[in-house]
Length: 267
Image (cartoon, rainbow, N blue to C red; front, side, top):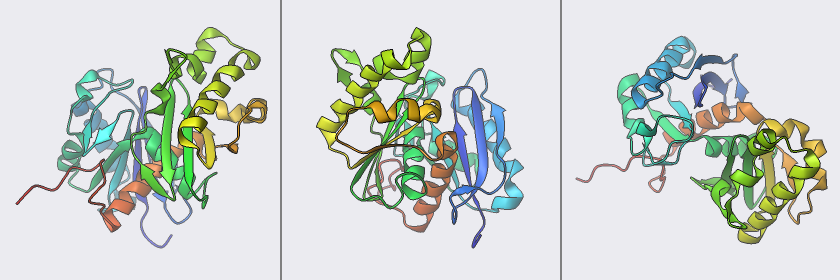
C-alpha cells in the first residue's frame, strides 16, 4: 500500500461492521470486526459503537478519515430517513456528531450509494462509461446511480411505483423469501422492475448485488432486458469499501456541490 488504509464502517439494522480498506487494490486491508447494533439504535448509541470500532483500528488508520454508511438518505450530513434503525435518525446531523466524537474527518453516506461507488471503482462496473445503475436486492431494494464515475446520491429507486405498488414490496428478495416464491414466481416481478427502470433511465449497465446475487446464474440470464446486467463483485463487502473510498475522495478534493456534506457556514 502506498498510504495508510482508510476505515470504512457499515451501519446495519442488526450489525455494525468495519474494516480498514486498502484503496490501491479496493479491498479490506485486514479482517473486519462486527458489533451488534444496539437494541435502541439511536444516533448516540450507534455513535458509541462506531467509536469502539475506530479505536480498535486506530493504530492502522492513524489520523485518517472514516467513511460511514447508514440505511438512510443523507443530505448535507443529515439523515433524512431511517430504514431498520431508530426513527430518531430522521433529521439528525449525524456527520457532525461523529466528527465531534471521533475528532477526525467523517463522511456519512447512504449504504446503497457506498456499494455503488465500490462496484464502479473496483468491481463489476470498473471503468464502464456512461450511466451505471447498481441495485442491492435484500429486505428492500437499494439503488445507486453513478455517471462517468460520479455518484448521483440518494436515488431511492426501490420505492418507485409500479402497477400501483411500491416496487420493493413486490420485487425485493426479502418479499420473495417471506412469500416463499420460487425463482419462476419471482422472476417476472424483478424483470418488470428492471424494465421500468430501463424506460426511465436508459442506463448503460445494471449491476445486481445483495445476498441473492450469489444465485445470479439462476435469474439474471432469464431477464428480458435491453441493458447488460451483471452480478456485483463485492456484495456485502461493498459498503465498507465504498465508504472508505468516498471518505478519501472528499478529503483529497472536497466537492462544493456534494449534497451528502454539510454546507460551509456563511461568512
